[in-house]
Structures are given as structure tokens and as C-alpha cells.
View 1 (cartoon, rainbow over the protein chains, first blue to last red):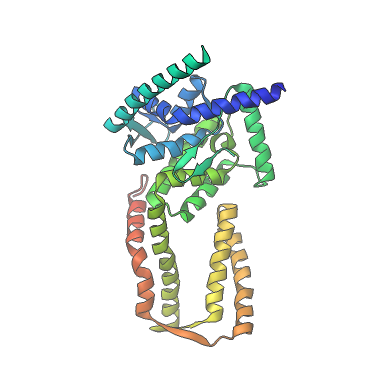
View 2: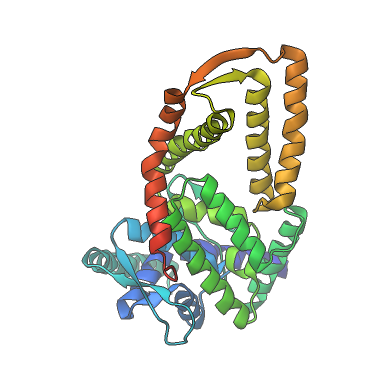
Amino acid sequence: MTKELSASHDQRRSQLLRGVLDLCLLALIAERPRYGYEFVEALTESGLDLVSEGSIYPLLARMERAGLVDSYRAPSAAGGAPRKYYRLTEAGAAELSSGRTTWSAFTGAVSSTLGT
Amino acid sequence: MAYETTGEATTVEVAGGDAQTSEGRAAGHEALEKGAGAELTRERVLAVCQSNWEYRGIDDASMREMLEELTTHLDEAAAAGRTPQDVVGPDAKAFAAAWARARTPLLQRVLRMAALIPFVLGSLLLLTHVFDRSTSLAIEAPRVAFYVALAAAIVAWEMRRGSLGFRGWTVAGLVALPVAVITALLIGDEPLFHLPLWGTLLFLAPGLPYTVVDIRARNNAPGKG
């Protein structure tokens, strides 16, 4: 029973993050340009563990195609081969701003409904 | 499965906490054992992704960039004590497919493949022109059957194993040869038609621009020259 509840809790978190992972990535890029692994580290630090870390790449590719982010290659501070860094475009900043507004209104409405 | 991709949409699975993460990963390992039947090593993940992207019509420059990005991530994850499966999920092919769909629209990929498949066929035919020292090739049923069987075996092998190698070529040849022999026994080896040199060149034409772009990208790749 506890295991079922735990799985259900996990699934709900998964579904919630699905809807906002792109916004989370945009918000992280808005702080500073980042490369793939840095997104995973930042999400993990925020308590948002991805079962498959690589799932950020299809999202980043889609956002790059949509012109929300662009990319460049640069050496990493950690050393090693140059990384592909993502940075926010104007369209991405507008999308993030709009997404934040939507999220605030949505969470407000849900909180009000849940009575939290 | 970690990826559910419908058309342009890609969804992801996330974990709630440490305990759940371990469970999710354990489930993934179980799925892998049932499914692919082989442990996901760094090399296997990269090989599976590369072959998947090739067959999905991702251009060379994009593929190289994606492989570099993935390689870096796998290395950093390994340094942090995580496995390749933690990065790509239990199904490396599904991961590769989701990334390919997100990276390049289907139409672009289909056009590329529609141009490159005749290009490969045209190259083989051109070689035959050269070996035969002839401007006209007799196309017989066994020859057609051999190439079709060889191509099918190569595609099937690469899709399953990720990379071809000597063993793959040997198996593909061993599959294609009997197909050609059986076709010769059943249909005979009389020429079906004669293909002129200009016909062969027509096969090459659509794929030439893609090939030139790929070669340029390869030469301009970081670490080259």
C-alpha cells in the first residue's frame, strides 16, 4: 500500500514537471548560459531529479528550433572538451515571462482550490 | 519507458526523491534486461544513438554535435557515479529517436534519406560500371536480389546492434549471397534491362548536394585540419 502511494506520488511529480520542464530550463538559462550537464545539476539541487537526465536534450533541441534559445561552443570552466552552451534569445525571454505569469495564475488557482 | 513521443511532443519522467529515484532506476534496469538483453555501456549508448540518427536522416554536422554533447554528459555523469542508463533511460533507441525528432523536422529527414538512398545505390552501380569498363550495365534479378538483401541485413543489424563492423558485414554478405543464388535458380540470370551510364548518374544527382555539405562539415569539424 505504501509502495503504491509512493509510486502514485512519484507519477504525479513526474506529470507536473512534464508541463513545466521547458520553463525550468528557460529560467536556468536566464540566470546564465549553461551546457547540458549543468541543467541536470541545477535541477537536482532544486529537488527536481530526472529519471533520465538526457531527456533535457530533446527539449533543448525543440526550444532551439523554435528560436527560444541559441547555442555556442566554449571551453568549460571545469576543463576538458569545449561544451555546447545554451543562452536565452529575446523570444525565449518573452516566453519565460509569459510562462511565469501563467504558472503563477495556475498555482494560485490550484492552491485556492486545494485550500493550501 | 522514459520517453513517450507523439508527433512533435516529447514527455519525460522525473523522480520525486532518492527512494523513488532508486526504484525508477531499478525498474529501468529490469526493462533493459527484458528488452535489449545487454548492459548499456557508454560505447553502446553512443553506437546505438549514432546508428539511430543516421537512419533517421540527421545530417552529419548535427549528428557530430549531438554525439559530442552526449559524450560529454555521459563522462560527467560517470565522474559523478551515475550510469549511462541514468542519462538515457532504459531504452537508448527511444532516447535517440526523441532527440532526432526534436532536432530535425520529419520532412527534412525524409527528403535527406530519399536523396541519399539512391546516391548509395548509384555509387555501387558506378563502381560496377568501372569494374565492367562499360557504359551500359546488364541488370539481372540475382544482382537486384543480392543488393536488396544486403541492404536489408545491414539496416537490420545496425538498428539492432548499433554498429556494423566486420562481423556485421560478414553476416549481411552471408544473408545476401544465398538470396542471390536462390533468385538465380528461380528466375534465372537473364538481364532484366540495361542501365546506361546516364541512368546511374541520375541516381547520384539528388544526393550530391547533401554529400557535399556533409563532407564540408566533416572537414570543418573541430579538431580537424
